[in-house]
Amino acid sequence: MNIKVAKFGGSSVADAKQFRKVREIVLADDCRRYIIPSAPGKRYGGDYKITDLLYLCHAHVKHSVPFDQMFDMICERYLGIVQELELSIDLGPYLSEIKEKISKGASVDYTASRGEYLNGFILAQYLGYDFVDPKDMIVFDEFGSLDADKTKELVEKSLVEHKQAVIPGFYGAMPNGEVKTFSRGGSDITGSIVAQAVGAEVYENWTDVSGFLMADPRIVEKPKQIEKITYQELRELSYMGATVLHEESVFPVREAGIPINVRNTNEPDNRGTMIISDKESIHANTITGIAGRKDFTVISIQKNRMNADISFVRRILSILEVNSIPVEHLPSGIDNISIVIDDEYLGSKLNKIVKEIREQCKPDAIEVYPNMALIATVGHGMVYTRGVAAKLFTSLAEANINIRMIDQGSSEINIIVGVETNDFERAVQAIYDGFVE
Ligand code: ASP
Picture (cartoon, rainbow, N blue to C red):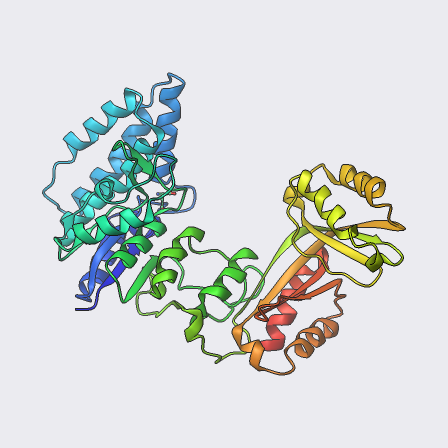
């Protein structure tokens, strides 16, 4: 029988009402055999995530401040879920044991992991599935990196024993058995690891949006949903700010050629977005999506006969390397080169860098343009379609937007343009209208 692995994010398991939706979804398809829940997330704006409360408990203990009130809030959430779902489990002893351990200085990872642990325990009861603790099968090496090979072997071996199981997300164990968590949002990674190990037909990632949209809905009103996107396109769009999944969660399933289906727990009839292998790429649409980011600075350097000075570019790049500044783009002409840098990394180092370039590279002129935004228009389809660039630039020109930089990635699946920060939103809208409307 085909296997589907379904991961449910924090908002999908935030309270009893959401648990009911999850049950309906899981039981609607026999193939949904391995279920990975997060800890309860926010029920409404201003609410607390259980994981955040657990981190706070740990911080209180560390500073010898009582944490009873905070822990009571956690207990209330779980006990409320159990009571409303009319489950006959007594969480009391589990909660007391966890509280006791936290008060005695349990590690921050152990403390944070209890959110998923308790939620998994409750969900397993509610679904009538086995409960499998990931600490016995998701393993890290002594340096704290995931031991992918050993984990795969252990997960495979352990799950053949369970036809249907709930496996809490977010954590595993160190070689000495101590609990270790992934970085925040890491339940996505657990789901991906399990999907790979059991050779799932699909990895379903249930969240509170119906997959990916072609553009940011805060900029474009009601953008179209992306039905299919390749892993590579997703990487390009996520890099430019469109995120739904934990970045590291993609690797195990991508390697195994398993598609990820991003679905909405609150809208289960919507088929969501399917993330598929690059090889399977279909070119139904010329472009797949548009994403962008603000706050870049361009340092433009002029030097007569730049090409003749063969170490010129290397010296510029060394200055950036020494100052730990990654380069985003390097558009160049015959006698000039521009360096596009993310302001987050540039910080207060701008004057220092300009000074070093002047001293070490002796350019004829150097100019700094702050306030640039980059917009990536992404799609495998553009490789096979003529006129994509023409349409893109015409859309921007007609909207009276000045393009400051153009870069077509060598993968040919994106065209990146740089515009003034003030033009950013209008530019995204213009590109979207040009291709979609
Ligand atoms: N509960 C964890 C967090 O809030 C992990 C997750 O939800 O994926 O980061």
